[in-house]
Length: 330
Image (cartoon, rainbow, N blue to C red; front, side, top):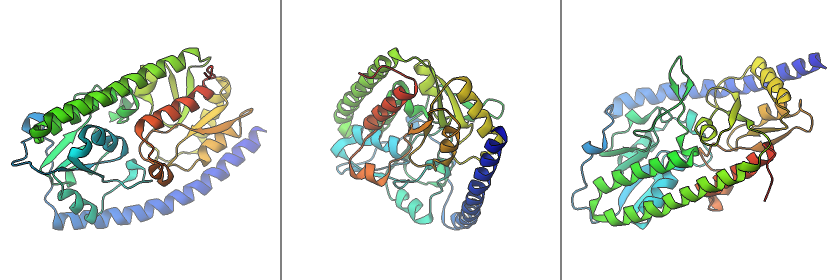
């Protein structure tokens, strides 16, 4: 049985590795081309400015054009800015942000806006390629955790902790007020309303997780460190780096053993990631199954069309997490 498991995992790994190699070769060619074009067309903006360095927009009688890097940041921006800004996303729907590299056209489109709001902590590795009058880093001033303490690889997924998400909302609010002081009261009011929703979300999570028999869960990549710390859980991951990292048969076998030792039956995948790794682990478990535990890095096209928001996604996560943790369903 053990030998059959090893053969299955090895074959699965080879098939996925071949697919990844093809994708990576294409991505490397595109990235090299983009770098050459950038050198010819753009002036690098390598200095990230503090809030005190941001200047207000002169004669701001129009709506601010605000571009957000990816979904959760864009959601926070829209909640705060409301009808007083023109909001758009840089990373398209359905695209996983860890691997994203903006095209020349996308960079030029962002450069025509007035404000870029981004998460920071390394997830937008291309940020210095954007030349724009105003940048707001949503995660500024937050205490961070590390994927790898030796290499000081920072975990950027602070938005999955509602308490830290609230801090990001405050940073975005303060940045917009400095840039557009004419709408100060609106930004304050909108931010307060959304912060109240985040407080309610935090309370709901604490209530829902009180009745759980288990504290351990297996996510696809280790994006839930802040969430797990906040709510007293233990995260284990199929991938111990980003979702794009190569996964070999050994860590797959290790996570299968972890799941068996902890008597876990639910393995979590992500909506923007191939679920084959999670399925391979679940198939080795008694009554194993795969559910989505979203890092909320983006939406599917169907979710966007349905108007799904950050709060909705968080509640979906809690529902699925409660099943894996064997909590009492209300």
